[in-house]
Length: 208
Image 1 (cartoon, rainbow, N blue to C red):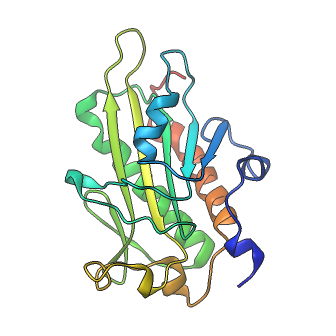
Image 2: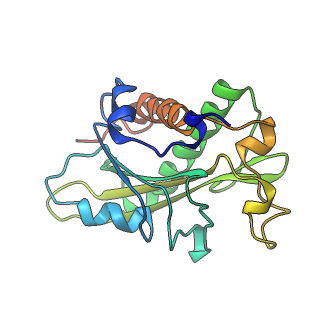
């Protein structure tokens, strides 16, 4: 296993690999947090511009849809949240879920030649097993567009033994699908570029 595949994510290096207009304009990497969705809210202020991305190497209370627990093996995946102001009503938050899931699927196709599928509403699967999930949470704002926290979790370099007995038959990682380890930093940069490229197209009425 190469050093690139095992080294921690580095915010400065990630930012140098981007030429994004919005998503990734500010990047934070935490060693550990409860949930990246909760953590990014602690950074949020009424005048904070959208585009902040917060990664965590490990989540102690990661969660998915309907309050389900999300396992996030330390240093093995990508667990991150994006702070956005898409200019949509809270009832339209599924549009964000669909946009993020499409970006995850497309990046996996482009980077690795895989053919993932989206299982409605928020999962990305390979061979019928979950490789990624999206959790969108919105907060109403009186004087500015509503905040949208788009959380994304991706299983990258786990082996089967990294998953609990409960998930071992239903979860998969990119490494398991490819038969090799993945450079997380490189994949993260590619995904942020795809998210940035498609965000304005999906939400043309946003105001940053």
